[in-house]
Length: 235
Image (tube, rainbow, N blue to C red; front, top):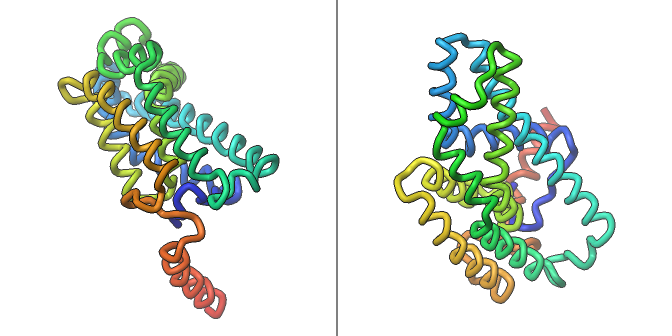
């Protein structure tokens, strides 16, 4: 499914299903300490913890819907200009560089501090019951989006269906939020993203693991899927 920056997001229902699955796989590992702390504070009430996780994923789903709407709007109004053989590399590179610059903003720093200090949030924002869990999960999810939306923008620019880029960005998020020195890693990542953005804009064909839309590699990997579809139709 990886078509690099030219990956078609498909129908809305398909996208939402894939997006929620991706967010559960990419974001919940780094959110696990918060979920565990909440569960222990809630004294093991499973419905409260389920509500917290649902509220968290609901905020990331909203982010995905905004991204989907923006994508559809751009395709409808400027699809030709965004084609890979025209301005596509420049747009993708600019998006990645913008994600890097966001790493240096006060908002990023504030949201990252929240994600790295779950106890303060639990003590200050505690709400009882499943509905309270949903509200707390949504609030924590909003901070998490504030911390990571730039990295997700970079993922869209590099290939939202690329297993390599998904795994790499998930690892970066994990390091930022959980490991010692995560703040320094976040600032160093800013330079890396700006450099990658310039690289993609200037010489996309030389970027490892970047599938260029319309490339021979993409066409080769698309053949098995067409074969599978034909077999399914026959069955």
